[in-house]
Length: 201
Image 1 (cartoon, helix red, strand yellow):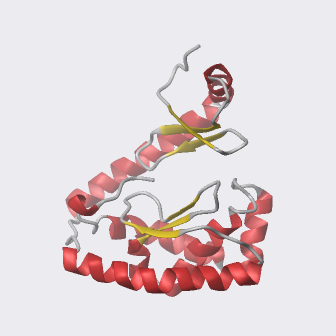
Image 2 (image 1 turned 135 degrees about the vertical axis):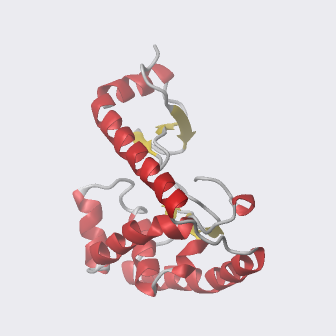
């Protein structure tokens, strides 16, 4: 069985299937290690209309980003500036993670700082947390909003109503600062030098 659209399957220790559309408009299917490809692609076909809409939306945003890049070129960070941001992030972000994890009564794994061009943070099935070094260019409230978002994924590995209720419980101004990041984040990510990028995940 083949899907009638392009997709990439990523297997991990997770227990459920999930679809994800990247900022570039690529479709990822996150699946349990032992699930058959037939089951995975059947799931993708079942959700193809949702995926198609999200892919179209992501590609339109990508085109808009590219247009803005041409019209408003930004000055990339130097390697020295990026290293300075990395040191600041390594000092500040794990401290804030520990602060909120204590309040939320959560255990977490490793905290990693990465140079990324699509994600601000992520949480793995093993409770490891990744954060974008460029968060250090944002207001501190934005950093806290991303940290709480990722910590809440330890309890809810989705973006359900229960997940957002948990986020708002611990960070009531989440939507305000998430909107700030949506509005300004693309310009910040464009400052990351191409030779210094860790990847998209």
